[in-house]
Image (cartoon, rainbow, N blue to C red; front, top):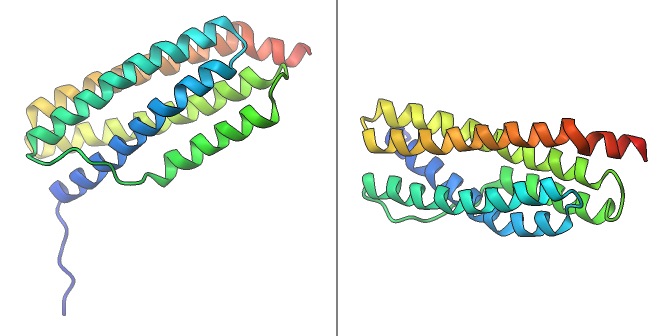
Length: 166
């Protein structure tokens, strides 16, 4: 028997569940990273992104509404792996001058994953004619890019030098 062909709208929905799970996992992880961070600037960046992530989840729930689906997550192995690496860094480098550099690297891995997902989903939303979702996903993509730039500035201005000097 021939296998049923899956469509772009099914792929969009599956990926939406994936990023919804990821955002919820990130929301739970950011306070731990904020607590572990030594740099006041990095602590502030994690706190700010925690608030933004709450907004990302709300936007995703609006995307679910536009496609008339219930907001549910599907385990995202990629984000589980990235957050596990972050937890390992927090444990292995606790109290070390390199801790913040490691936290920044883990946070940027998360941002890059999110930027990839949101860019792809925005493009698919365009293809599917989901005009409200396009705007919602683009707004989140813009915030993820801004967070990545802010983290890069923190890394270049203070954190990497402190890790190297010690």
